[in-house]
Length: 137
Image (cartoon, rainbow, N blue to C red; front, top):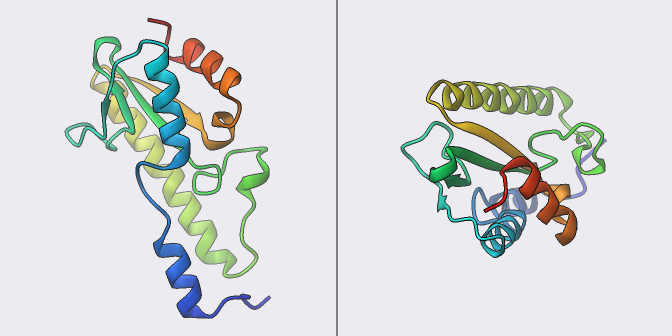
């Protein structure tokens, strides 16, 4: 199936995808701060540059996009029909990188917490999830 967009339009669209300070990430930050949790953002001295780091708790938190990290069972994790070989390799490389990052952080004494983009939509649910996975203040 041919792409609906021209290569220039697709390139412009893909270039707008942000790697940090995304809307789901900002929702997690706002909720964590309201819960009294204090954190640092994007610590480059840690493997994988976690989205949030809670130093007192030794927690490295990642907010994964459901599409890019292929959240199992999520509707946003649909694979594109164009260039299936490219996307399969891309998603496999993302998963392998996530595994390497988690292993390196765990070896360094950090607890890795992953929140998915779709989990950030419901404010009450997000508050509960952060409390369960990170721990309350």
